[in-house]
Length: 310
Image 1 (cartoon, one colour):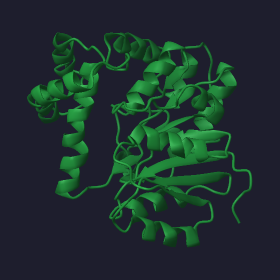
Image 2: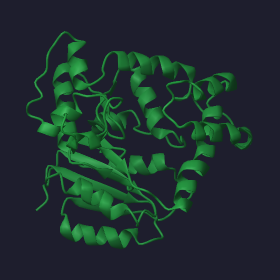
Image 3: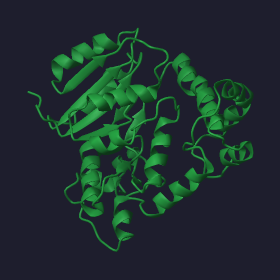
Image 4: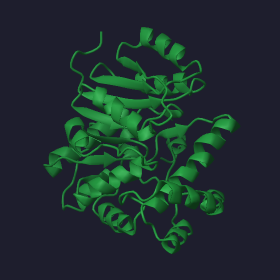
């Protein structure tokens, strides 16, 4: 039986991810109990997604599926907002997608969030890697996502950082992205990039600064992808001119300052407390979870867990 009053909602959008959605959802559903509700908003899929979801619902009572009629005008940001609005839980977990496989450390992430919650004494958004958590009402009152923005996660971080409520936490990444068919990779990563770059230009980003950021030595994207972003600039610029300006967002120069300030105050969960002159007990995390949240993503990968020297 699922809980009538779940404490946590995991909000997931889906559009035509029938080839990966079962593995993705099982990786989540198999590690959480009825303190959770897993909300999937289907954005009008035309593949077998709904059939897969229907079968999974028979097995997992905490899975809630909300099918929408397809509307090409609706952005991913809007679909994510709908999923948060449908949640009945006090806390929401965001940005889990239907091509993600999650190793069993979601509960450890939740416990880390509550450690920070007891220390900070104010509402906040905690961001890990492709994993965000916060109080539902607080997130709803600040968005959580602005419709029309293609870089919806970065834009949300930006707005929370401006009010001192974005807490990035470094940890070993325990998510793996499943391989997609070549056609889906092209559509998801490359065609979408045109819209992302266009929105960044519409937010009044100076092209000189934009080029400089693309070739920063610490940029997270591959050189191939950054060169692609340069190559599509003419198309993106044309789209930006047609659509007109939008309000400032995470791509603005101010974002770099806010991001650096936030990271200087955090790091791993151990770093977070040490920078405040305190120690923290993480013994209630799983053994692997203690290692994951004590180490940096720059130093280890989840596959390192099986190595004998750890």
